Image (cartoon, rainbow, N blue to C red; front, side, top):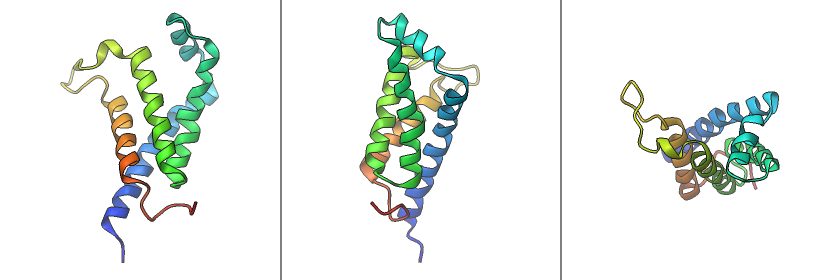
Length: 128
């Protein structure tokens, strides 16, 4: 018998990890130049841009697989807080043309990852 709570956790994990993973693959293919420039504009070393691979490739895979989900989710939270602080701080409550928040996607990633920290992976996961 399927456990609805565990199925819900799996759906959240697959959605969060799957969608964020596309951002990581994009950076893997196209590079981290934009992030390097943003870091430099804030007086931070450009090599920190490679941390995005942890937050947008490794952490989403951890979340998708249910392997150390809480740690993967924490890495996503950190990644999103840094992204919001560096790039989007001026848009925290800005509305888009259609009435939604400009940062809907960033907030989705941040808050879904935060929820997974508290919920855990559920029973449909890799054994760890």
